[in-house]
Amino acid sequence: MDNFHRDTWAEIDLDAIYDNVANLRRFLPDGTQVMAVVKANAYGHGDAQVATTALEAGASYLAVAILDEALALRQKGINAPILVLGASRPADVELAARHRITLTVFRADWLEEAASIYNGSIPVHLHLKMDTGMGRLGVKDEEETKRITTLIDRHPSFILEGVYTHFATADEVNTDYLSYQYRRFLHMLEWLPSRPPIVHCANSATVLRFPERAFNMARFGISMYGLAPSPSIKPLLPYELKEAFSLHSRLVHVKRLQPGEKVSYGATYTAQEEEWIGTLPIGYADGWLRRLQHFHVLVNGQKAPIVGRICMDQCMIRLPEPLPIGTKVTLIGRQGDEFISVDDVARYLETINYEVPCTISYRVPRIFFRNKRIMEVRNAVCHG
Ligand SMILES: Cc1ncc(COP(=O)(O)O)c(CNc2conc2O)c1O
Image 1 (tube, helix red, strand yellow):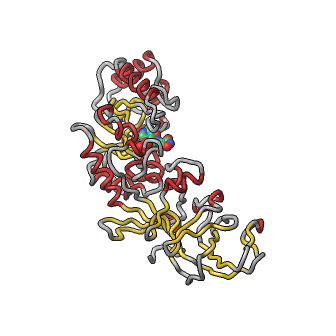
Image 2 (cartoon, protein in one colour):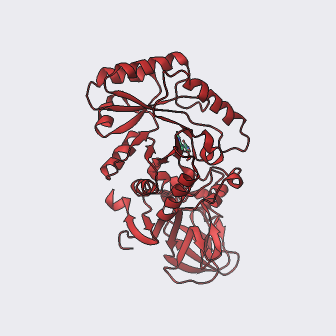
Image 3 (cartoon, protein in one colour):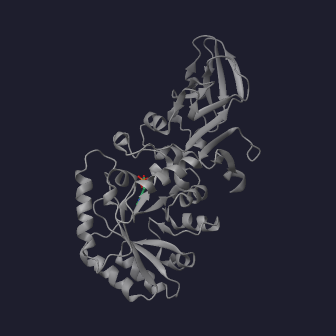
């Protein structure tokens, strides 16, 4: 534990990541590959470490949101194909090509500008994104689709490697809109002179519920981290997922309060009787948000309420009894028979589980476990 100097950390169980990907590989029809979605620092789990593990488990492609995330993976020695799912700049096509990074195209004018700038000989791999009803990015009409495929065909270095779409409601029990989008995708694929080598439409919810609709690659994000795409479809999933993320801290201060004494900003919490209060070195700048006031953590295998306002760097909990400085506290994860899941925190925050690990900031070091042993400690504060 000597790679960081505050007793707050996240633990990433890479064995869980491995198993979640390996189980998907076994579940998928033959010929359907896994694209591991590692954008946003792998949903807060550690981009390079998750990417490496997912590739070991059989993923053949990676996906990120922005070009810089792909460049960062290359800098960290990741050589697998990487697709940038979001928009990029025409002027960055050369940079992407040089680093063998695949870009998403969804506008003819973007491609015209890229073609006017890039006359290099290094191939530029492109995936055409079609908007079948997500309403975010994607080509929507046949005329523009044909302009794009013609432009690619005419450029000596542009290669249409893939085509894809994204579903808006795959995590909902009702499949009406999902089926509409799937049918729309089938129709829009007919606009292409021929199907490119890679066709993909499935996120975690889609591939786990309808693997036969995944074409030949599935974009596996949230469930690679062991989280269900939504509470409503969790009971419908075909196999158990293993949650990879946990969050821990240690008591740095313990004091006895007399009745009437206050805790934290606004003096909003008043001790009702003689109470023992502990201070934890984690706050909203770490992504442990202020709205988690009155939620609970685990200490000595028991629930302990968060009392008073959560500060930028610290928060306070009411202890079951006086406890030693340095006692381990679990904010997300297991202590004995008690377990606080990412879903529990998301539910309390009235948000989705995706947001919780993404929000645990760079200031919280990540300890990576592989084969049940510490493989790496990443402290982004000191090491950038
Ligand atoms: C285009 C695209 N493909 C695949 C995925 C993976 O989805 P999954 O994590 O449900 O498997 C995402 C996730 N994108 C987002 C998840 O939350 N907000 C998003 O924009 C995505 O945007």
